[in-house]
Length: 56
Image (cartoon, rainbow, N blue to C red; front, side, top):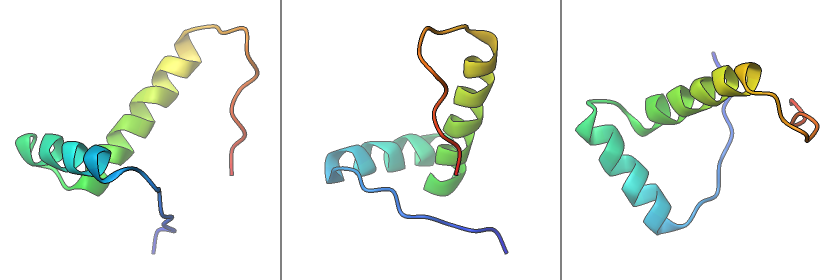
């Protein structure tokens, strides 16, 4: 089974993301995983002046 974690956000942010997920026919979990994957792709292709975020 895949490990999970809790992400604490405001209710407003949670509700907004849940609506976006519904609009796309996804679960909230699927949407968050897609957002994380997209960020990884962007981070790999765009150089930054700051050090990379620590990985768990």
